[in-house]
Image (cartoon, rainbow, N blue to C red; front, side, top):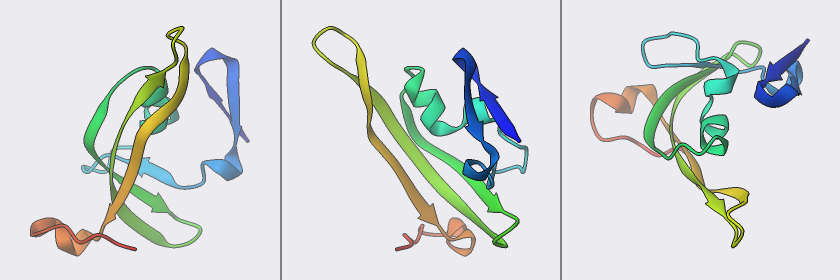
Length: 100
């Protein structure tokens, strides 16, 4: 299976095996995943999403943030400060624990 992304791009299924969900468990469409939002020009800060990989039998909560950087001609060149930090589900009630 191939997933279609805006602008006619496609992504093979093997690259999107994990499910991305909001904290309530609602599936987040591929085009709303953090990197795609940043590449559209949205600035993200402290976006928490649940990522579930059924094949590998794991689920984790990640905190995302980033912004798009432009060159001197105002052309986008990369997503700067794109970060993804993992927090254990048990730590969400108190101080988040960073996973290594």
